[in-house]
Length: 106
Image (cartoon, rainbow, N blue to C red; front, side, top):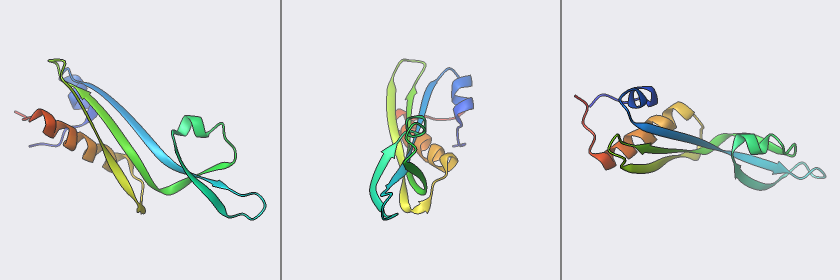
């Protein structure tokens, strides 16, 4: 089976919603130490100047609705030891979600 992209699925009449969550750190201003790990959406975190983006870890979530109005969702988790790559996470999440549909590419 050929790997599908969001563009190809949408072109064939499927509805696709994608969300990326990243790991942000909050630093203690007195000691400079990481005091808390918080998982946030990027646009919410931009309003919090005391949070800093981590290069590692994260989650890619996807929700796919078929032309027959059947909906499944799944996600891909990036390990805290790996650098986050949204394209790889999206590819993994699409593959996992399409398995629910028993999707076959012609």
